[in-house]
Length: 383
Image 1 (tube, rainbow, N blue to C red):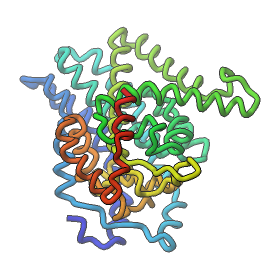
Image 2: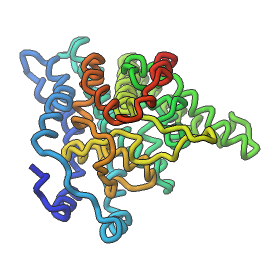
Image 3: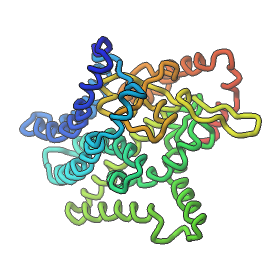
């Protein structure tokens, strides 16, 4: 549909269409409202999950691919300096925190939902906090201003994953698409092999990287300058607040939605780098990261909802590039669907491998030795 639009027209549309993230947040009160006086109220608690992962791939197919790449010399410099795009991302922090507080109250007090409805609510809230919250936090922690860094840290604290603020920048972007990166899935590795390793090592690596940074400054690992201590303390305050206000159900809600949000993040990590790797040079170092080391998806609907996160290839090539000027590269490895469809695919390992393994092999055609037993064994070793 949008593929026939001129790039300039598409850029004008996208300026305001980035506010589509509000649709995901609005899905929470909508699903609650629909459950009122319903014959099956618990089913409505899953409304947002089914909408995102059921309707999302259909909308990607309907609206098609994004035809707009900002011109590097004429448009990108102007777009990069417009404060409107910063304001748009900063606006998510207060909206998400208020939504989280309200959703916790609903979880603990809405009697029409049994355990099944509460499970659906956790999945729905966690989807919003992962698909909007962590995605925007990812954008913010890449920036230099204290306000954006603080807003990103606040969102991450609300899902108990402050380590991402450190590990993603200093770990993942340095070691992406190598066996040393816990966020880069190896060829042949299933999602369910990948997740436990990612949970554990991304958490531990964040503390290691922060300790190393402090050590270079002559400071001990556990001191007030360790930002992880402060951000995780804020997560603890969230937990105490929910527990005091709503009892044990408040604690279950806060920790449950955080687990769902973090899991969604790690599934996206799995999708973004599966099977791709940087070649090792003769001096033992890895080649420089470029736009061919991440999977790319250019479906316009999910691109807008996720602030161009799907243009992940360009993001890894130019980590400081703002979301509004990220570019699509035809020679990057291309996913067959937007992220919503890819998440569903990843949850079904046989189907994932049937679709994605041939794409990985095709990408390394002519140098199949890159997919040697060492790649597969690396996947097995990470379980």
